[in-house]
Length: 116
Image (cartoon, rainbow, N blue to C red):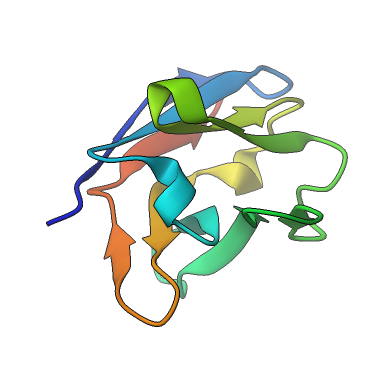
């Protein structure tokens, strides 16, 4: 069973930065894609960024130019670097990993709160 463990969330002031990490229990080369989603209170879960095994990364319009998704295969980890954070970025952030033609896996989520 694949396990994904997120870390790096917390409280940050508007304009600040955070880096989220998602450590997988096995090689991330298995997953295509890996991504980050978020869910704010009272809202649907939404895509933030996805990283295909090959090809271009995809970002939600609301985070383009501020967030960057990256993979480190040596550490079986995917990251989400978040800069210029806004209060509307406040949400629980979830890591997702998909095995093509098979299963979809989710982490437990990490809270990000942007507030002064």
